[in-house]
Amino acid sequence: MGNEASLPMEMCSNFDADEIKRLGKRFRKLDLDNSGSLSVDEFMSLPELQQNPLVQRVID
Image (cartoon, rainbow, N blue to C red; front, side, top):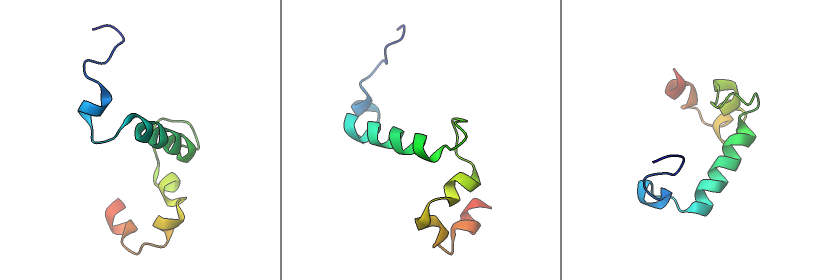
């Protein structure tokens, strides 16, 4: 209860603590407007997605 998680993060996902930290850091880097979510434009800033012909179909 309180501010602590009920289960360790490793038990709630397939990621270990270092991977979760890296994912959070990468998310914050992509979240250009610091909104806490990624817009289509923020996703499309990834070169890997710009090159993918299926991205627009997935987004729509």
